[in-house]
Length: 401
Image (cartoon, rainbow, N blue to C red):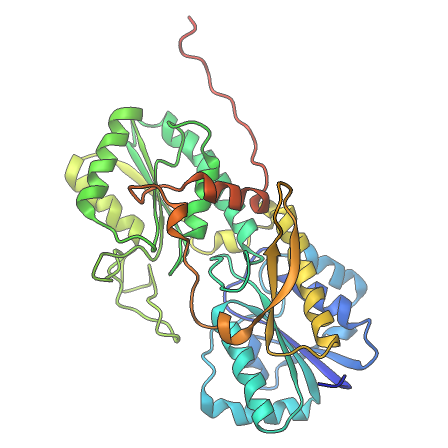
């Protein structure tokens, strides 16, 4: 495809992250360098807002604001979870023509990549020249075609720090509360819940048990492991992903509510949550008092705990998307490929939108221990450079008198 002259449209879709605005800053900064990319528009509230002509002139924003996006959490443009329907595509094309959009960039996860893919394909089918490039984003880290996603490193750091700190509280308050259940987001994959393992320095440290959607939940096995851990350390710290389910596929949360993409709304009104259900199981079995922690969207917007590497990579992904468009590359998502070697280094490549849309990437079996309730060194080696080094805390020596 030859270089096109026209306007640019950018959007942010799905759940936010601490660094999604850094990707937007990268897109805007790079697009401003291209003379043939005329006006730079932003979708206010993603594709749902665009269908209602809610657009903002990003090119008119001050340099101070654009620079500030790099350290501002949440979704600056506003987001949505609108499921783009086939019947919407003619209207999308009409709006693209109205604003003379020739370059489309959408920052998001699986469903967002599907949106870009369908719009780009529809435009091609209808002889409208449009370059569409996706920029990866999700704290869940479940996108195919990339080593990891911007947003995961910061959310993983938030979880790891939370578990490291609340783990000390759980240890020291074990005479009051015998156990803690900490729930993370992660409908289909356990990458984020697994990041809590980075908080652990010695066997007695939290977390002791990690439950993820990749592995079927068995209540008897779980209760047996809880009993073993309590006998060994005096308390039990459990981390679970929101999508943990039984062998038959039914969610432990027992939720019946679904979103517009037909995904189960874990912890939604009308349902329960994994943390609450696990809490009930343990209390009913042992009679112990315990706590549960459900952070929900907090790890998605905790800029104070954001990963430095994550911020840099998010900005770079935005820049790379524009560079790809500059070369006429379309129908792809920016992909991060980890280069071989002892030193952590990322190369920026591409992945076809058709291969990353919709499906969620699970953690490989090799990243789980035999009992499927903790992670192996392979996961720790994978996640450590993205999340960054955690602080060291001291422990009193109770043997000294």
